[in-house]
Length: 182
Image 1 (cartoon, rainbow, N blue to C red):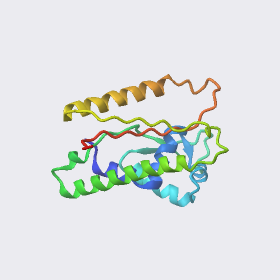
Image 2 (image 1 turned 120 degrees about the vertical axis):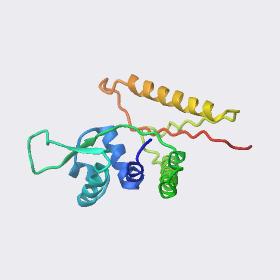
Image 3 (image 1 turned 90 degrees about the vertical axis):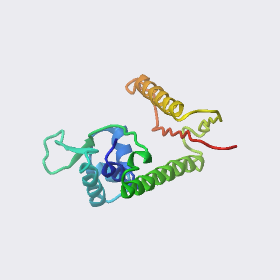
Image 4 (image 1 turned 90 degrees about the horizontal axis):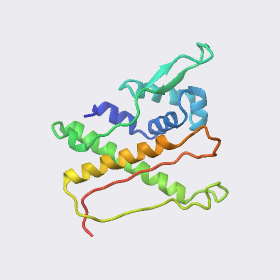
């Protein structure tokens, strides 16, 4: 089970963008990170320290040995949690539910941004795929589906040769499976 401080740290909008950026681009200098996220250096530094506390990111030495610059990288990749993990603590359960709501808002906002995208994008002829289904499943079967999807995503991601010269763009994937009536 993840600690609630880790979950609440990541589910702040700018912190989530920082985590996603470091996941995609790797070790980055704080000034470059601020420019990439169109944020102030002081704000990004503050949020990096907030992510450092629960062990999400860590400071690293400047690759050029310059001690005046601040470099950061992810200290861990991925996390899995459920609001049910915090049933024993009403305060933590409330924080987990709000983090979950924030995560869903971020997912929907990213999808909406994609649909409003600039037609000059190299992906303008690609309409993001959508798939959905309705089925019968037990809680254990839903957990199995989640594990299978995660395995498939990890295998797919590992199969991409980022050094093959193909031009690529960051891609965001999200899925939800939950009990629902027609």
